[in-house]
Image (cartoon, rainbow, N blue to C red; front, side, top):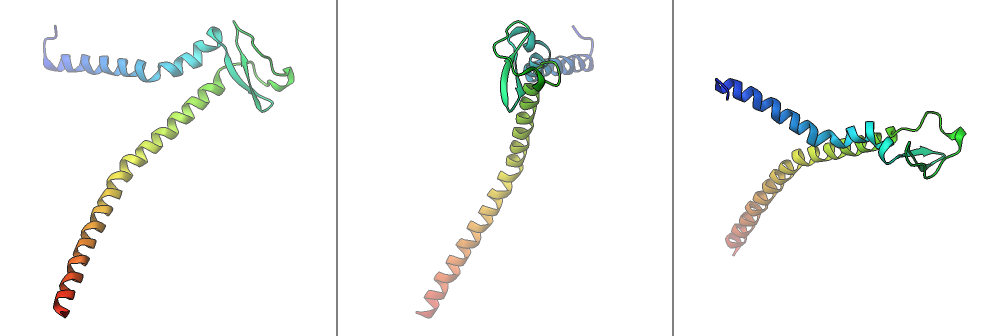
Length: 126
């Protein structure tokens, strides 16, 4: 039990932060540190992907095409790029949708006013 509400809130913030870190970033930690030993990595070499791992050696690219020892850095990079681009798209969507809807609403109201003016002119001409 916590003595004060502040202590409780501080502990809650720390717990939520740690849980969010595990939930959101566990796939990146797995790919970065454990995947190579458990199931192998896809490595780019000679314009193709090769499955290479410590425990499983499925296919090997030519030795001269690997500049560095095999690691899952290519997969991690791909995952991070996709995540970043999706986040950018979602931010643009979050900002753009209300802006677009407000402009659409303005246009719709102006259209309604133009139609009323047009109808009033027609009645005035008759």
